[in-house]
Each structure stands twice: as C-alpha cells, then as structure tokens.
Amino acid sequence: RPVSPPGVLRTALFVGRLYPVKGLPLLIEAWSRVQPSGWRLVLAGPDEAGHRAELEALIIKHDLKDVVHFAGPLQGEAKENALFGADLFVLPTHSESFGMAIAEALAHGAPVLTTVGAPWPTLAEHGMGWRTPISVDGLADGLAQATTADSAVLRAMGARGRAFVAGEFGW
Image 1 (cartoon, rainbow, N blue to C red):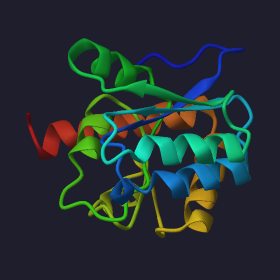
Image 2: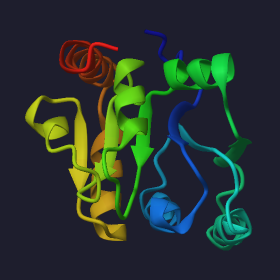
Image 3: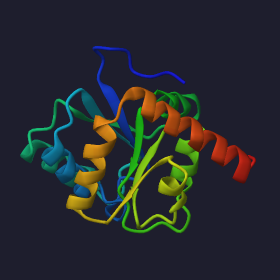
Image 4: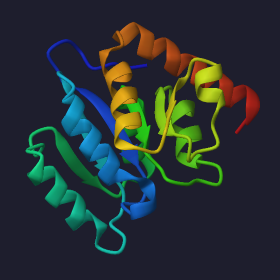
C-alpha cells in the first residue's frame, strides 16, 4: 500500500458526515494539543446542519489552517484514492451502531484511531489501531501514539486490518 514518501506530509483522514455526533471538534482540539510534526488532517464529507462553519472557526482559533483541510464529499474513485493514500484513518465519534467507515478504512489498509463510541474493540486486540475514551485527552493520547509510530508499524497495522476485514466480512 502506498505510504507518503519522505518529505511529504503524512495524512490522517476522516471520511463521514460533518455532523456533531462524529466528534470532529474533539479531534481538532486534540490535533492542536499534539501538533503532530509531518502530518496533515483531511476532513472529507458533506456538511450537515452547518457544522463545517463551527469546525472552520475551531481550525482558525487553533491556527491549524495550514495542516487541517476539507476535501468535501468523496465518492467512487476519489474516496478509494483518499483511503488508499491515508497513513491513518480517524473517527472521533460519540456513537456508532457499527462504524462502516472503520471497516472501509481497514479494507483499504489504513490503521484506525477511533473512540469507545464505535463498537470496535478488535482494533487494539488485533493490532489494527487505537480506541480511546471520547474526550480531547483520549484522542490526544491516541494521536500522539499513532503519529509518532514508524511508517512500517502503520503499514503492518493496516495490513492486519485489511486481512481482518477480508476474513470477517468477506465483501
């Protein structure tokens, strides 16, 4: 799977609705605390209920406009390319019934950072990612671990995730 070459910012990717339940304000606050060197955060998805404006204000407040970007809604090949190009997938959710975005990210070989709001305890159990408390502190701890991990470690986690999804879900 492709990984960002040396000198190119590594990518943490969120794909989903820009909506309060997804926990993006927590993620932006955590990102501002960690300020991972050599990384950028891409938020992809449709704006719902005007939530993007709130997120943009937080990005400006924390002076993150150079490293946090909006990609808009992604579908088809554009979504696949984004998932394959991600070094890390992030879903800072308050609540998910399954978390299809997590399964998609794993199927594309991206390790995942999410919260206990997603029913995916297997992430840590199988070495495919991190599952944190639903808080800025929890996400900041997870981000610090994920963004300081060696590229080879992230690739191996992504490969385990891809194999897990293929074996468990078979789609």
